[in-house]
Image 1 (cartoon, rainbow, N blue to C red):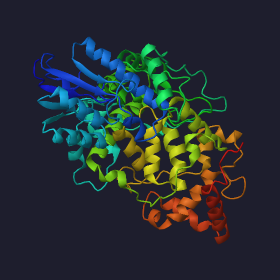
Image 2: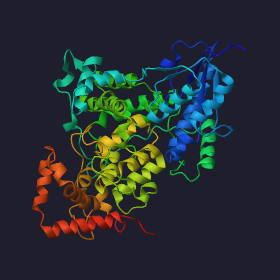
Image 3: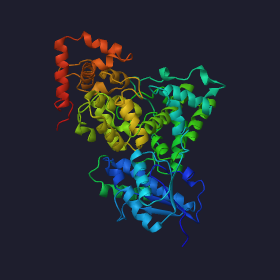
Length: 517
């Protein structure tokens, strides 16, 4: 038997045949190692759609590895008697595989990186961790950008990226004469709604996915979420088809309506590509190139294309840099001292607030919500309620099919919950129910009035907005971007403040907002 030179560790979010870990792969002396383990669905209460997405994509990638002639040691969750953890399973396999070294592309999760390092050390094996070429920039690139900066702002990093990679550039200037078209990308749908939105690009579960669905129903029966309409891309070919359809059908109107919401329509003009990107079934370069080509061909307007590219080349790269330069301390941040528990109905959707019910039911049904639902519906509510950031993080990591910690944690703790005290965002994003009324039709069918801050019909978002400003008045008053909002607190009488405080207390103890019966 030939001695094994390298055992290539491939994680569930590293499904790329061209990953750096395979650069000098020699099938005669190297092998690939993959494992399905219960821990990855239980360290947070992973939803059924999320678990099925990862496991099905892994099993399909295993077939791709075998077709490419790469020897594979693959542990299946439904046939294994090995340990329930990634580290334990790797430990057990190393005893008989006996490689000379372990090799992998850099993982996207601090916890997993530490676990694999510990296994390698315990066996006295070298661990070769290679740069993840999937991204436009390396962690070192971001660290160099961040050096000496008191705060990190995506806009400046994004402009550097545009120049460096010559994306939407005309010489040294941005195409169209401006870097940012956010002001043009904030329209709501009119009273008639979003119109004839193209159907979701859906993929009927094949035999492999059906087998995984049965496994998840059996092993994780008590986990949140539904699988009746599971249709996510789980192969490279499906991911490429999703990209092509998005560019053709949705991109032209993506920018204009990227912040808009509509009851009962989960998909709208968004790309739905984040899971495929985060599993590495798609490369961000091909996504950005396809969007840029759509602009140059006249198929999509600049504002839409720039807004989409900003999410990929700017925001996605930026949050990864924040994660790896700030961890592990970042996950403990709680700048506002939030200590409330996450409402139990976040896991069920059992609330009488229409906006939250729609976002939560959709999330549990599909493992998906668009960025504005995550930031300005579920995230906004948790922020103003004062939920402990770690609990909010655990929920977001658990319920969404695209959730990998490098991208989820900074988005949640930094952008959504302001738990990092301004490392990522220049201010906490807080708003009354009037914002939701402007950007969606939710309020028309809701028992709560977004114009009221107190009283039985007061919208909980509006109550909690004023309560948030009052509780954090001293801290927020020192932030120039919050000064105007904080000044409005002084206009309230003592009686009005007391009414807000009492109503907020009723919301926190579950007397308001919970659906009964």
